[in-house]
Amino acid sequence: MTEDRQRATGGGRRRIPESAGPPSPVSGLVATEVTYTLADKGNFYVIEHVPARVCQETGEEFFAPETVEHIQALIKGKKKPDRTVQTPVYEYA
Image (cartoon, rainbow, N blue to C red; front, top):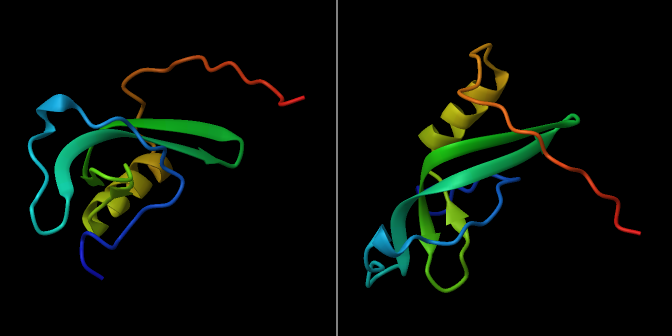
């Protein structure tokens, strides 16, 4: 698969910064950095400054295979996080 078609699952969409530059005339994708979020086995992970290509029309994020592997290694690894945040949890009722 090409880099543009390889997409990691579970990541949240993020607004594209104004500084991301113009979209590619061929693909409509902009190279930028995003914040990737993932819920896995009761844990919530936030990975900042993840390189991605983002569709200007839909906001869909695409990741290179190497980027996906790096995200998975960060989550599975024993490296201490750079910081920790508390997250409130609500039930939709």
